Amino acid sequence: MRGIVRACLALACATAIACSGLTLAPAHADAFGAWLESVWPEARALGVSRATFEAATRGLEPDRSLPDLDIPGRPITGAAQAEFVQTPAEYLKESSFDRLAALGRKLAEQHRATLVRIEQQYGVPAGIVLAIWGRETGFGASKGSYSAIRVLASQAYLGRRKDFFRNEFLLALKILQEGHVTLADMRSSWAGAMGHAQMLPSGFNKYAVDFDGDGRRDIWNSVPDALASLAHQLAEEGWQRGKRWSYEVRVPKAVDCTIAEPSVTLPLSEWLRRGYVLASGRKLNAAEAADDASLLMPAGLFGPAFLTPKNYFVLKAYNYSDLYVLFVGHLSDRITDPRPFEQPWGAVTQLKSTQLEAMQRRLTELGIYRDKIDGKAGMLTRSALGAYQKANGLTLDCWPTTAVLDHMLARRK
Image (cartoon, rainbow, N blue to C red):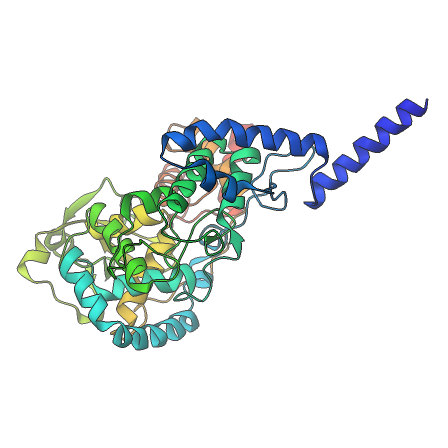
C-alpha cells in the first residue's frame, strides 16, 4: 500500500511540475540530457565545437510554459496571433499607423545613409525596410525576452514540430560557434524569432549579412546588419526594384468578390479598363500599367480593395498573413504620405478558428475549397465562401459569418 501511495504522490508531483514549468524531476532531466546528447553529433557535423555546445547547454532545461508544446495531460495552446484573430479594422488601426509612421520618419532621417546603401544594393526601398522593422519589434523596442537557445531546445524536445525546431536549434548553435552574437545576447520571441527583424536561425543562415563591416552578422545589436538582412531576404524572394507593393482601388458596383484570389491575374491596365479606379487619384506609368496583378478584398465587400502585383506576394512570403502585408505596406506609404486608406474598414465579426475550420471542411466536402484546413479566412477561403453564397442564392459578400456557417451545416443533414 505504501508503494502505491508513494507512486501516486510521485505522479502528482511530476504533473504539477510539468504544468508549472518548474525544475524538472531527475527522470525528466535525465531524458532531456539524453536528448541533448543525441543532438551533439549533428551539431558537430555543422562545425560546432564541444566547448560551444557545452557552454550553450550547461544547466539547460526546457521551458514548459511556452505555447505550442505537446505535453501529455495538457492541452496544446498556440499563441493567438493578432493577424488571425483580429478583424481588419482592429488590426489596421489609424492610431497605430500615426504613431509608427511618425517614429519611422525620424528613423529614416537617422539611418538615411544606411537605408540609401541598402536600397542601392538590394532594391528594397527605405519605407518597406522601416515598416517591417516597426511591425516586427517596434523599431527594436521589443526584440524578445527569451533565451533563443532555451526556446528552440524546448520546442525541439516538447513542441508539435520537433523536427523543424531541432534544425533551428542546431543552426542557433552554429550561429554561436561563428561568433555573431554572445549566448547572453541571443534573445528571441517565444517561437525563436530573433533580433530587430525577428529571423529564425534558418533565415539568419540564408539571409543575414554583415552590413556594418565588423566581421559579424549581428541582427540583435546592429541596426545596419538587421535592416540589410531583411532587405536581402526580400530581394532573394524576388522583390522587384522600383515597383509598388499594391494599389488601393475602388471596385465596380457589380464586382464579383470570388475572383479576389491570386490565380486571377490581369495587367493593371486591363483592371482599370474593366472599371476599377485607383484610389487617391494615383496614376500609372506605362511600365506599371503592363504589370500583372490580382484582386485582394481582405474584408470581402466590407472594406478596401487592392490590386496586388508581385511585390505584394514577396511580402507575403515574409509573413503569410494578408493583414500583416497590408499593415507593412500601408505603413511604408504612411512614412512619406499621411493619407489613410481611402475606403474605411467595415465593422465585421471575426469567426473563431474552430468555426473557420468547420467552414473550410464543409467547403472541401462540396468540392469548392481545395486548400489546407487551417482556421484562417485567407484569400482562397473567402473566394470559396463566395462561390458557396452564389450557388445557394445568398448575399454575395465573401466574408465568413455564423449565419453562412449555420446554412452550410444545416444543408449537410
